[in-house]
Image: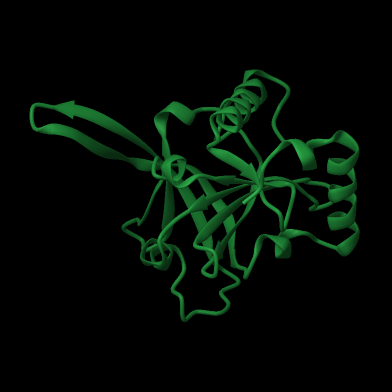
Amino acid sequence: MLEANSSALMMALFINKNLLAGNLKLSKDNPRIFLLSPSLSDYFAVGLDIENEPWLGIPSALLPFWTDANWAEAAVDYENGRLYLCIKSMDTNELLLGFSIAFRVKRLNVIWAQDLKDNPHAVLNMKKISTEKTKHGDRTVVGDEHIFTGIKLSRVNSASELFQTAYDDNYANLLLQESGLDESFTSF
């Protein structure tokens, strides 16, 4: 998932801080997915680069730990207005952790056209975004270079489709029940 270094610790702190603040919740459809609140989702941006490839803008405050993760897949969900970013095991392709970012359908159309059903060559890249203070107010700056490239992009109808098998789904729910997390955290 993440290398055993400060990036893993920073990711854990990010999750813990935002769970406590109510900005992250566990998905009912898939307990390995954290749903970002709309206010936390607003820190991210989407766009197309000069080669017409979609990118996800990552706030500079989340670097470098956000890009140290093994992002294996991104999936667009028009039904729920979400972009799922998935960290998967490199050995088994099992979903380990995911984040669901809320976007309006108009923004999701930039990443994946709503009328397009399948595109096996679609990829999502990441760019650094930051905010500059100017005398006219804050200005968002998008970096020229990709900081993470080649994330496989697909389309799903819900978070439950991100599991590989029914066994994975049952196992994840069992782990949550045994840990008590299924009762102590509120899901959307």
